[in-house]
Length: 89
Length: 462
Image 1 (spheres, one colour):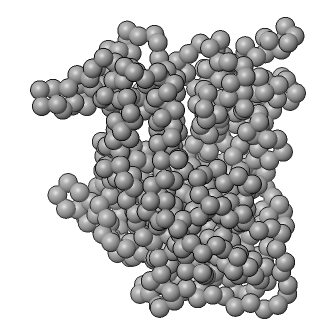
Image 2 (cartoon, chains in turn purple, blue):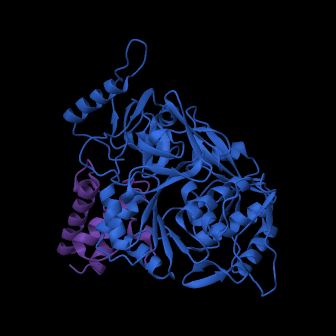
Image 3 (cartoon, one colour):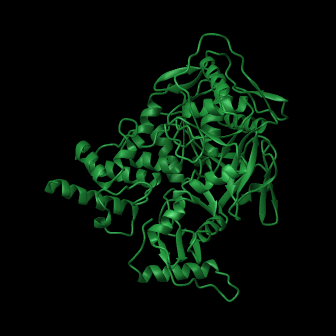
């Protein structure tokens, strides 16, 4: 992984932790472990919360009908990848 | 528009659309007429397997509606449990051994025989009659979580369901020209009533989607003709208003499942250029009152519904309500009027997180039923703090389970309770501070939790 990708992934991990008030450090989120359901255990209310934080920070809206919602949130790495491809700021 | 019947006739029609060409649904920008809808209902009804009990898991609202109506016209009962966890599905199966699920996905995702929703279906310009349904027919069983751990069934009969949603449409002025889009699942009582049955029984059209993100909700609404209605929750509204999207004009907003602050209601009315009404109800009674939040705090009951105070308790009865039901909220009648009231929050044992309801007694029962758990208790989130009522606060749990790892316990809980109730944090302790009689007063438990949170840095985030 490139240094910038790693930086973005760290930044997204920090965003998830702060948006949801999780009692863990950003570095405790495993890049390939599921965010939704098992793993980190996020639910749809959390996903909406993270989506808001993402739209504010990166300037684009998440959509469920043109991208696979479950896939985007399947892991920190895939969320980071989606942000890298769609961010406008 | 059809008015709510005060006394029920022997039968009521499946839909209230004036003719077979009336639009009943919008799918991907395409209108579906009542004729096609009724023909598809008939085809699905013919293909259903023999079981009399149905778990309708269709995520697409149109397919859900066709499957529900096919179940009704064929005399089947649709079960609406409060969650689809393996534990809950197992309990549904024990209650109704012939239960099968209808799914529009390849995998049902639950341990039940699956009937795959058939699509595409053929339809023609042939006339088709609108089925009349016996008002006494039980069409839906909804379940609340009883304190014993067994789900409690509440039978919904056709006549009273129709009376309920026609009363709603009449109060809100919804009729044949309206299109309705919902952000809540059809499998939830509020979603069933306001996004499925109300459109069908007011001659309106339902949007087939279940938009989730703010941009999705705006796009779904924008694609519908006016007048258009958005059926949503405080959480989606807050996200919509904070989400840096420009909401399209709407004609009515409906919110339910949790209280909405006056500020958010006013902001939503400004953003969508239309009135916002809140709906109040519970699983047992269905929807029973409404208010325009910006016009005052008092709620108005639906036609025929009356509230009665008896000691500390308030009971709802009349109108569409099957049996007098004790309400699980702190309620004050306005000027002793049985149709106007103020809502002052929930009873201490009732849990409501993001519109999902259960009781601490039920959650504690589930926690303590897990092998390896010696003792355990759930605690309500703090009501204090500066959060708006629409922000989500989670439960905490204290548990004595020396043989279990946190991950194993969370997994066991996940199989039993809705994920929204999973504790954050979940703390492992050596013992709970029970008093001499074995009781754990909630004040003592909260103080114990606070002292643990102050000293520990190792918490489990769910």
